[in-house]
Image (cartoon, rainbow, N blue to C red):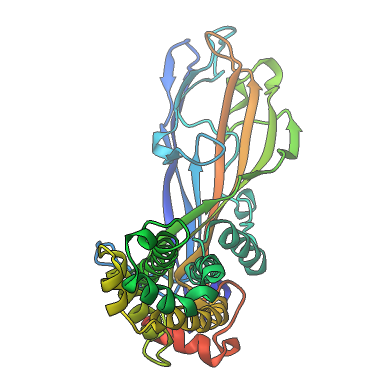
Length: 438
């Protein structure tokens, strides 16, 4: 299945934009000065835009889904608007119409006097050259922007966070661990000693403090791991929008003494047939880009090598110890003392494994970089002077808009990569998360 819009199947359709319409007739006079109404002429010129879409084609049931149900696509549409960014699409039938009538001055035998009702537009809109060409960014550009967006919005890599948190606890408990080998002897002394020893500042109380501190560290490590396991496979959705890129307006062409469209007889204009209008075509361009995706991470099976189970078992022993009211007898009965060493030894292995896994642990269940490109040509005709009452000028303008929406899809490990480049471990992680290549 192709992954870029330029390789996708496409379809196109015409976009009806209404008609340039007008109705005109002339009044002349016979030799006796009587008015003669001429034949009425109805003008109707259909105008069409065009929409071209390249897409895989996906069904949609209207319900939100966690899975990736989209795909890369690109669609370009041409339409009319009354604003330069095309937010107010217009059909020609909705554009203003004018009612014009030539003046009655200097009417003589056989000299016509015209009437017109309909559009007076700055251009015919019928030439394909009047529509700006689409100007979307390349796939390479969008993928580079998508990589930037991911780096800015990805959730903290939970796998790497876990390694850091466990390492901090590991270091936090280690200073007290060397004294662990003496805990048993100190507990035995306290068990056989009198109250004087139990109340001594450097006897029973320091021992209890040491054991409780280590037990608390282990309990926190247990909670961190279990939260990490609970969040495995959950979606974290992120969106990032770049600042819009707006180009400076460009004047494509300027022409003076231009008549509106449809073209009318010169007797509608000022004496001598001078229209006096100035036509300009001005181009505007704006691009809006944004990223949307859902991140997740994967926890490997913790029973593979037993290190995590050993760590959690030791933590459960510590939690039990931490929850008891300690006295020398209770403490002695909780021997053997290997639970403390077991936790730190196993935790060291877990940190090593998790650190290796952190590189591949964070995965995109879906990710898209999207872009809206609007290229808009303003057709403006200003200063046309009519032979009418009251006299002109009449100003007319319309925007011909070419709008392109484009979307490129990320792989589970980001943009610009291929499934063939993934390592066996990466492929195994993707498969474990139920992500398949479409």
